[in-house]
Image (tube, rainbow, N blue to C red; front, side, top):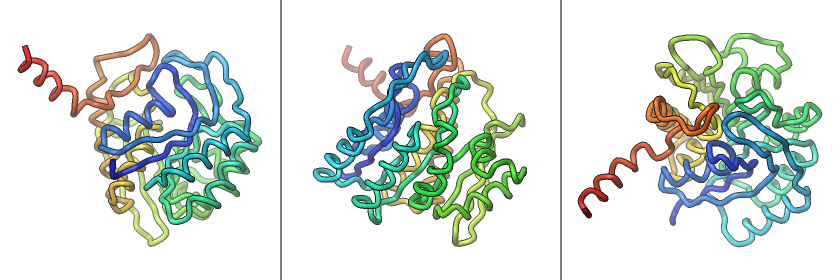
Length: 274
């Protein structure tokens, strides 16, 4: 249990996104996963039925309890929901998480279209939390909302987002209707890299953003440089989507297959035991 990752995110009882997806991804990379619950959406693959607030003081207490006992090697942040939660997480990280890589996925809207971040919390995210992040990983709608639609191209979006204070930015291009699903990476050193992949025609994409950011977090915990962690995470997610392309769980947007590379091995072991 050498490599330890902490997820600060919301709940998904259906197992495809949020804390559950993060824990699966950490495990798939050989990392030990820990969690802090920020919100309780009641959801499945078809959408969110309701969302229950978690007391802000309990979020702070969860974080403090982890940091006082187990220091993570990297941290992933997902759904935060409100301005108060954003401020709580930012303040606690300032106190406890110096020199720990932080992956911030600015989760705003679920795959079903349900809101996961209140409009009034966007400015707090930009001013208080993004400057603490090692990398942010917005999809295109999230990126446009953060820059208030001032720019259009992915390159310009990445450059604009980098001015908000994170060390690096990965803008995800999955919402573009193209035969490829390409992301662009920018960092403060001036590096610019396109992470390219063939688009996989699948409805089973629930939790892809959570999974990608958690995979980057795991790569950083393993000691990989940021760009290498992003490239490995991109490859992992592509294979996880492909493995679940025709194997849906649920009636809506099914999850990706987080353990696509492990389950065939387990099946062989089971066969040998018969």
